[in-house]
Amino acid sequence: MTLAAFSKKHTHLTQYTLIIFGSALYAVATNLFVVPMDLYSSGFVGVAQIIRSLLVQYAGVQFPAGFDVAGIINFIINIPLFYLAYHSISRGFLLRTLTSLATMTILFSIIPIPETPIIEDMLSACLIGGITTGAGIGIIFYASGSAGGVDILGFYATKKKPGFTVGKLSIIFNTIVYLICALIFDVKIAIYSIIYITVFSLVIDKIHLQNINIMALVVTKQEGVPEHILKELGRGVTGWKGVGTYTGEDVHVYMTMISKYEISRFRHYVHEKDPHAFIVLNEGASILGNFVKRL
Image 1: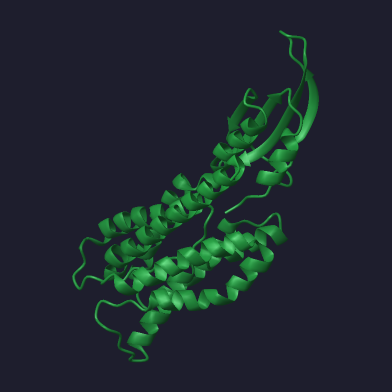
Image 2: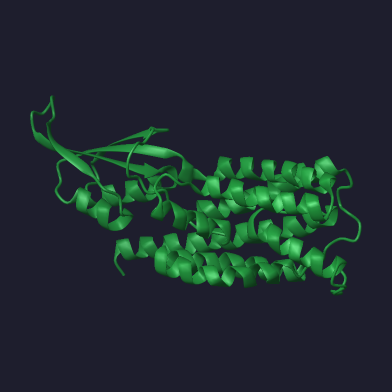
């Protein structure tokens, strides 16, 4: 096995480990802190929780004590999006999404929901629940994964319409979810759910490194560096000729834009071609134009 193949295999293993851990953290925290307080999550999980509540309160369907069917409902309503993820995004993205959803569905179903809330104060439950579930989803995103639902729709929309963002779709979708909560159930529950999801979103943004843009500058004497970056990361590279003022030797100067979570792979791929390459990374660069944001 070549070094590049080993590195790629190790990267995939790390990704799936983090996705399973993040999904487990999200599911456990939801069952322990969010559901006992009758709070509602965002996205498709929130929709699944609303369907579950309607089945129990209005249809009279009874489920075993401590069992939350919302996880199974969430998986079912995500099924039509699997086709979209596979054909419009990538096979790897679909596999990472399936891993996350399968982990969540299993744990949603087997982690018993406490009859008495662990944290009785509603505001404290919003904070603790938001921090832990947000950390779980943030870890999934950090590992280039997805929890399905709005993530898939938003990512698809950004590819079809460059001016659109996952955040815009999330705001629109969640506004509808919480309006339904307020109309059908209780305005107070809807308000606290909004507080919970605000904390949840802030924590995701702190972990979600894909939102942090990096300008990368490479100075090297070796050929083939931009082709390697394009092949391994799928990032375009702009290059020009330069001269080292100390040595007077000709050098190649390359510039590209990456997200913060791609830094380690970028450094690895550059040094694989030239161990002595000079790399400059500038965090927080603004980008106007065609730059692909990746989940």
